Every structure is written in C-alpha cells, then in structure tokens.
Length: 249
Image (cartoon, rainbow, N blue to C red; front, side, top):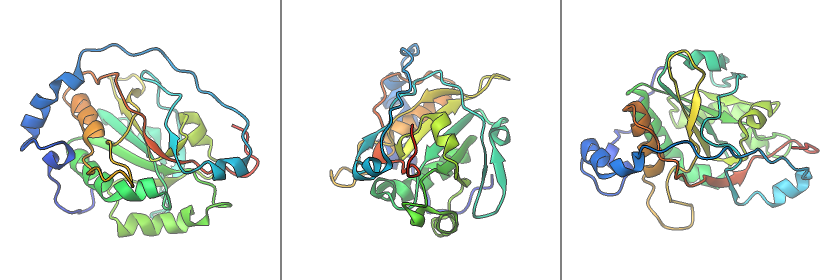
C-alpha cells in the first residue's frame, strides 16, 4: 500500500495543543490505562424498512461490536485500480484500521481531509488502513464505484477504498454508520483483534469544534507502542449505512 503524497501532517494537530508527539503521548498516557476488555456487546439486528432507514439517516451512532471482536474475512474490489483486496493482504502489519465511509455523507465530508492526513501519517509508521463503502447505489448512486474512484483520486487516498456491493462485509463487521472506525491489533499468528471502535474526535459538522483526530490517534499511538487501549470509547456518529431497499438486518 504505497502512500500517496498529501499535505504535510503535524501530529500535534490531532490533539489539543501539545507541541510534539512525545508531549502528546505523555500528556494523555492515562488514556492508555491498563484496562481489561469490557463486556461483549451483542449485535442487535432488527427488521427496518429501507424507506425508514433513509428517513432516519441524519444521525446514527456506531454500536453493537466491542473489543475482542475478530476481524472478519473479506474480498472486495478497489474501483480506482480494479485490484481485489482481502484481509490476508494486511496480515504482515501490526495493526489495521478499517473505516466505513462514503462519498455523500456530510459527517464524512467534515472529516475527509483530516482522515487522509491521519492515515498517511500513521501508514508511514506501520499502520495498515483500508476504507470501505457499503451504501446502496440504488438509493445513492453518487456512492457508486465510478464516483468512489474519482473521490480517491481527487483526495489522494493513501489507502485502498473498496466497494462492498453485497453489503455482506458491513454486516459481518456490524457497521451501521459512516464514518465508522474499527482499529485492530495483530498478536503474532492470531487473527486481528478489535481494540478500538469509536469516534475520530468530538467534532461534528455543526458543533464548531475543531477537527483534531484526538480519540482515534490516541488509540493508534497506544497500539503501535504496545500499550493497551482504554476501554472508555465514545461511539462514532454519522449517517446510517444506506441498505439496499427491502434489506432485513
């Protein structure tokens, strides 16, 4: 996964005020407290008509998957290159960030440039990153493969941006919104294990808070430095994934 050139990134931009990454880690060391995995949460799947999903798409929180969850297998195409990607392509990395995003969502648009900067910065430090779009192009054609390829090219995505046409991968991960972040760590030959399933930071399109990437970057720092990630994690907030009409979850 070769990193594309992006605007120069400053690690301190993703947290409140620290002048260096070392200061950042020292200041927030308490967030990487030696904590055990919280109780396993069950995936809750209800039967919701597709029309209701569209109506309720304005604001949805990530839920249903907790630390310890093992990364499911997938095989998806990258519209920009035509390459097929699978979980095995990332097996040699110490950690993997899986992001469910899309083109049209205002919550994703609000963070997009900073997601690219954060990903580019940490990919150079050994993090594997992949983005997936699972939205139905029946209801949202602007999220289709052609536009995904254009989006990846225009914003210089340093990570593969994959299309989940069947939406099976979103279901396997328990993803419900965009953006939604799953950070996994690798322990030897064992499967990737989820250590962070939460927000990018506290910023939202309408709350006038600066985009810092604080929550996600702290979790990544902990994983890459071999420290446990705090179990206190705020859910990601965004638009609901647009399921195919008639889909029962």
